[in-house]
Length: 120
Image (cartoon, rainbow, N blue to C red):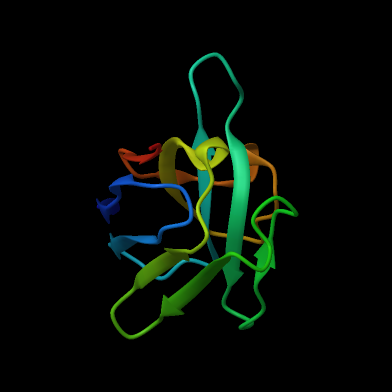
């Protein structure tokens, strides 16, 4: 049975840093990714880490966020630096058994989400 369990997140002032992690169980996925969502808006792509070792980022987070993936422990991490109020959202971990890109529909499993709040 597949589970994605997120941890981390919380509150930070603008300009600060936070990290979130996601531990997957049940199988190894071709692509793992992070999305985020605010009330009333669609789920938004943040970053993806396929097994190839490449990394893909949304333009809005490029050069501020870093996604890493530990295949041995089946865990992904998202290090978020220079956070802005507009980064406030619920962050979701997602996993795809095939190639996953920026479309949420490409992902087969989702975590429960963890809140990240950036405010002064």
